[in-house]
Picture (cartoon, rainbow, N blue to C red):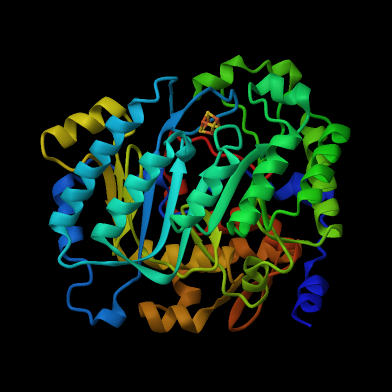
Length: 470
Ligand code: SF4
């Protein structure tokens, strides 16, 4: 019954004309303001005081739940399309040193937290978390469990590189408590794989997927990328069929943004081998159609989920949320982030660690938290952040909710934004009602553009370059 409801609601079609008109470059809004607005006047002293005040004045049940993010920056080889903060190395011993420093950072965080905490989510990202040996992974998880309690239903997830994980290690990961996995797949075509220096056969990914299932890492996400060199409509259609045959619960279909002046590794990509803008559009439209035919629900931005997955259910009943990993079924938490370049959030502050590994080590050697920058949210930021999350997740803004929570008159406070929204309403992307603004099914593709209308920071200059949906 529930499945039928999801499937009835999932068919979305979108015209080329609308995409050409409204697909703008913009942030993905995994935070508001976005990380390029964080500044160095936010120091480690500020972060210490945020940690010390976590939950102060609140009953235990009123405290925001707590998540952990751990960044493992190492990768054994370079994927040319990569825009992540990573360290390419063949020296396996580097991870042992890094884990010692992660522990130093953890101890400093613990010294500042007022009490022992319960963790509702843990995510290991990178880089390549599976660069760690099993022994190291065991040590890391034991260390975390020594210092934190984990909720019985905690979501414990890890990014897996199918090239660096053995089938038997998946059982070990499950035994350590991991219950979600995200696999970097990108594209199965061998010419594309050669052009981006990431060779992994279908059999390798299939084994990894089967291993995840057998081990009990039930909900598996695949990351795919379109717009890579040597890709074309036919080759990507074939990749998609192979992906569908493995039936991952979730799929993130990212658009490759070629920014070689900003990301050095991308200079190894021959721009002449990239598909044209029109080819990318056709690849996206084909993928959208084919994934829906295969039973996937379009969640928003680059995300799809199988109709029996909890993300599809959450999309249907408007209970989706967004965090630094993208769409989630879990409500917003405080987030302690450990490791080089990691971004956390405690109450009304965002904090980001240094992106440079030697600087990360030096700060910890000096007994300091390795904070590079951060941001204290003002009331207007909280209001706009909440509004943008509502647009992206519930897709329904009820004006009175904001008026009660923030003491504003919605239509007066957002007079300019509502005038702009009228043009989106004319194009059929939103419906403007007396008491609310509703994102239509078509509008779901353009939530990034809709959100940007409410982003005051976009009127200020930034060096950030954002990607487009297509
Ligand atoms: S795409 Fe992933 S595995 Fe490849 S270099 Fe970047 S972080 Fe490492």
